[in-house]
Image (tube, rainbow, N blue to C red):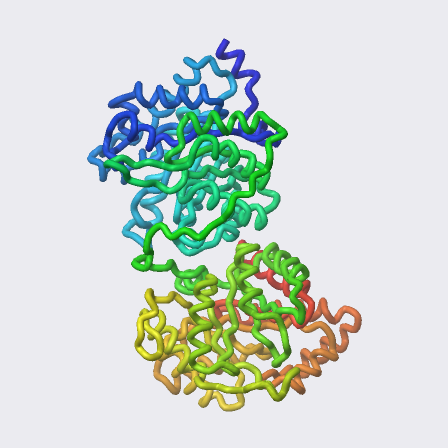
Length: 630
């Protein structure tokens, strides 16, 4: 009978392709805590050997409740967590036995279509630069556990409760190397303000997990159904073509009489099942505090196609004060530290509150390979939508990190510092500090042009003040900010010595990188490096993302050469654009590519300025990424 059943059972990926909801089981750890009376911090993976009947009975209870998928009791069965519990050397024993118990529960329940998910959680030890483990050590630990689960014949591996999604991406990569054909469920966890422990929003995490090739991506733990529903909405919006999972806790835990209790009822979870599926989840289940009763209620709800949609109210709930937690470095900061070539494209907000065309263009740039989007703030003093709003939308809805242009012009010191706090609260932690264009050249020449602080001084206020936890007056801001700050640089300035003196002030203030003014004569970059070393006695080491402007017409080239300060286009390039005629835009792309090739080794990235049409910018971006891959 068992062999015949296995023949008729769909593979996990085939089951996903049917589109029908899949119901997973609920909590294992809190159930073991309740039934075995063990401490909440006990090594529950050891019960696969020490008390297997309890584990088996929980599996069977979930199957009886109607679960389509059960997870092995192996969430913490990696070498580091087992060592911390005094269970060294038992990774293979606990993982193999965990799979055997799940298979035995299915056999004894006479169920022929239940999937076994090998449960894998975080290592419990930070990975460099946030902890003591090297990347190779972490990969080895994941490989040790995963190889046992794969060899034991699980139907799918379920990574869950990863609050640091870069660790999750590393684990997925290890599994792909071990067994490229093994289906993967990848679930992240979010906490305060719906951010991961590393400070990333759901959209960014969803994009990264989808790119990793995971079959199912989603969210578990962290909060109850309302919070999970909100995270799921953001993930679905960011990557609409992905397959999603959602497994909430039974509300927020309370300790009563020494026992950990979860308030959400089975009846509430029945409503939640319909909600999560309607939002976009294919795989649903429960996490901490959920029981077979919760899963049975969800089963009943799924089996009633006419069930009402319940819109869960999303509230703001502070579980604990997290002011002691440090924000992880931004992606830009990590790329700069690693020396990775970084591609960012500038986008200017529109003179409108509509954002659909802007988001569409940003999707195109992200697909082409852009690492970040630079969001200009009132360029040329023209009235535009707030750059903060655009940057926040790009990060929240598309999951792509931004660099927010932060002009000092038009803001007094009170406004500057308040705006910085607001930027950080919105997750906008990459700043390009610049003076900004004078209002007299723009739409409203009579507007205030106040300038309390120069860019070099503001960089110091941010890096030496706010990033240390205090404002300009020395008052605490509650928790240090974690801004990555860039400055402006013109390597072809008329007075190079003056430019270098100003740059040194910015570097001393703490500038992390520079955005270079567009250069059409690469030899000027080398001359700048040489002159900098002559004046300072040290090599120029500040990372520069050099601006390139794919020219689109001879008329545009003439305008830039004659009317934009700091830009000089040599006759040779001017003649090429003029001679290209109707193909000028194409020639402009070729020129941009040639300039970047000639500056290779002298810059750490490209800052592409589209000039109104994002297609050439996307083409240059894709070309850079192809070269990076090769």
